[in-house]
Amino acid sequence: LWGDTVNVASRMESQGAADKIQVTPTVYEKLAQQYTFERRGAIAVKGKGKITTYWLTGKKSLL
Image 1 (cartoon, helix red, strand yellow):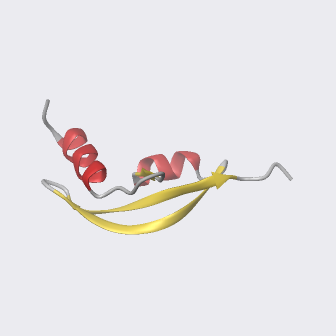
Image 2: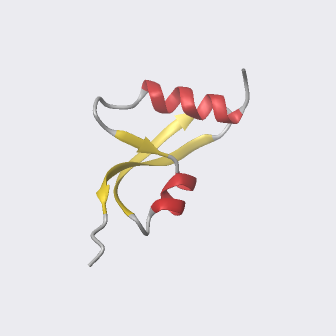
Image 3: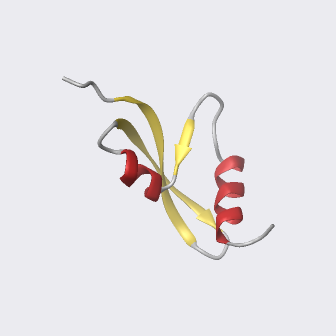
């Protein structure tokens, strides 16, 4: 396997943290209305430069 998706996944896995869910900007944008996130900061990804990632911190209340 190769390509941008593999490079991003590999970099996120290597720079992740135990018991945390790290997501890309695309996932953040799609889930931001239902879940809360903490901006993690930028990570370097081969062939893409730096991308900002987010930690998923919880589900938003329905109230």
